[in-house]
Image (tube, rainbow, N blue to C red):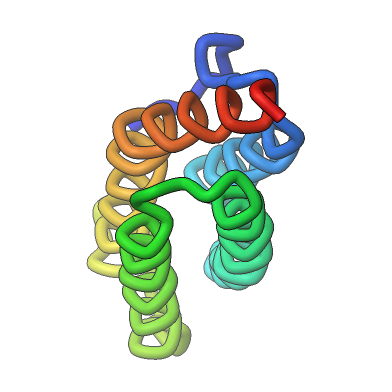
Amino acid sequence: MELWWSNKYTFGSQLDDERRAIFKLAKRFLTRQDLGSARDVVIDLVRYGKESFVKEERLMESAHYADADLHKQRHQFLANHATRLLLSDVLAKDAKPGSNFVIKVATTLEMWILDHFMAEDPVAYATVAKAIADR
């Protein structure tokens, strides 16, 4: 899995910088050299992702986004999944390409970034941006 930031991932919102940072962390994980750095990046991704979700949810609530609760549930699923992964595999001894730990993290990143960022967030951001513009 390769990740390259593109301006097509921006929505002109205050969360674009956070999305860029998550991309950078994901890329750091995919290019890490040892287990210690892999764990550190996963810890940073989980922490930063949860913080970003809270900000995004506040923005949706302030815009009275109709599907805010559903979007929040998706965030909760992603955060719980990433946390369980971290807790279950943080003591993994193998972070080499193709290892179980790396495959699980890469799959989670794919679900989070490609599915959520690219498919679910654009719908929410378009609605939120319109609601803010209409104020």
